[in-house]
Amino acid sequence: MAETRRRLRSSTVVLGGMGVIAAALTSCGSEPDRRCVDRDSYDWVNGYKVVADRNCTSGTTSSYGKNGKRKSGGDSAWYYDADVSAGYAADGTFSRSEAVDRGGFGCSGSGGG
Image (cartoon, rainbow, N blue to C red):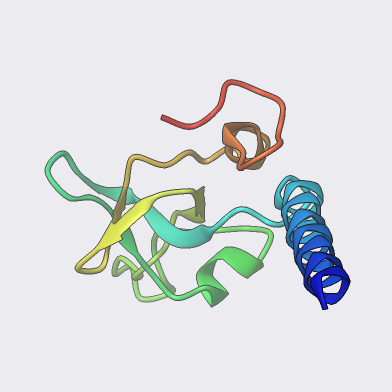
């Protein structure tokens, strides 16, 4: 009976260790959290206004529509690893590679902080 308990504990340790290794291997390869923001909407208290993702999917952006009125999300871009609150994103980066370098567990780079 003691042998059975020992085997159970060993398998629990092995399975737990595999989970840690899997998390370390996948954390760097995953896409960083991103939000589509209007770059012209920066507010020094709140950050950038979050807009619909469709505003970041087209290759070209224009701040003004055909009628000459400013479009919502006109000068939009992906903003990575930001703190999001009440429709605004702050303390992030527009550089995807920098967001990946901020990294999670097991990543190289400057680390988060």
